Length: 44
Image (cartoon, rainbow, N blue to C red; front, top):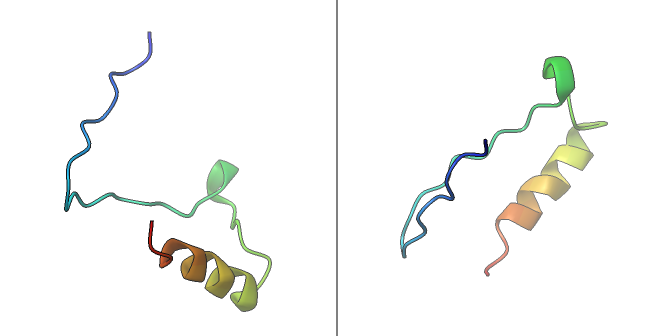
């Protein structure tokens, strides 16, 4: 059974994790991580 959908509302804060399978890193290097963070900072 799947879990219920989250309720979204203005000014909500979401928790984002950056961890791969078996806690492996998902970034190749520091530049790769910085590009990911730049995408997260884009306005919706």
